[in-house]
Image (cartoon, rainbow, N blue to C red):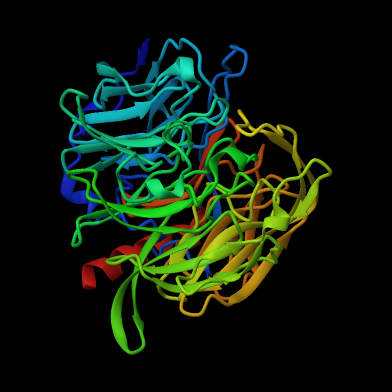
Length: 535
């Protein structure tokens, strides 16, 4: 179903795939802005000196969806292509004018069911947009009109799979993942043809019989039901032609008796060749996880010197409470360090892997473990600022009691339960060279937020009380805040149009855009334009 307004359609030009490699100031063409996952913007018109003049430019509120279980919380990162923002919630896609917030078109998917917990966004290349549906379809639309081009089934709704991840476009590959924890199933990643939606390759997260890693499972049956969902978008290094992905927890989720072993390649950071889907290397962050700590957090790519020589690196602040830095060409561990206090590991081995303590597995009487099942971090996008040398992440410091309820030799489903206790939420800055936490800003209450840092000396986040906040990225001091109708529910983005910088964020069912107001805003925009002309 399609609603259309004839607004700025002439401006809806094809997205040049080259923009995905180095986006200009007037584009945010992929989930993290670019392939690196850093969510760092070079824009400076909005900066630490004039941030108090930042005000609301427009707000776009979604209409309610009366179907039971349907979420209208905007978890998607909007993509900006030629002045139009594109974003999704379950069963819906919108195109909105990035200058005014007016609707350009709206597409509604007629769902046959599935879990409507959220949608993390769309992927775009040329004139084509791609998104996943809760009932297991990948759908392609024409970005100029919102009309459907094709639909392809990518998972089995009857097995309780569902779709939620934002597709990532790498040349002629549409990379899509799957979600689902309720019925012991195997996770996988697929590449689809952008022209037709035809399957190009599929990579199974649990190792297959006869493959390396199969020895980490007790049986083929355990592999076939082994979990490892792929529900957060990948990052990509075009020079190495490697894509990087975090994989989800093994299944049954809390009961590990029927899946003895490390359960490769669940709970891992993996590097795949996007042309073939072949595994190049892996690093497992939580061997034989029994605490629901999906390792899907964004693998952030950056370059730095290690021992006096330049290295291509990758960093992840994992849900299990550990910060990892890897060589992204080889997968070799460079650094492992906790960023919150944890009690589930008895040490770090020679490969940089935490070694699980068997005494911290779920038990019938309950086992107190930190972090909680919510994790020390979660899917909310982090940010890495090359100017400060800091990696920023929203964190929880909390415990859960983990209970084992299925005592069978081959448990099924979750196999247990957990009860969370008191917790605190923080925004933390980690030195990616040492793993040291340079500062922590405590939020009162519980909640996480996506992040954005800029060359204007700003770090944008949400707090736990419905505020959008700008902080000093070097110290964590609050520089500016404004109240919204809900907590931040996605990762903020920024862009520049007509010489003005916008900052856009989703909170609940509303997308908000901010810009500079008054003389200070206008002078800031003029100065930024003058700076660009002088380069």
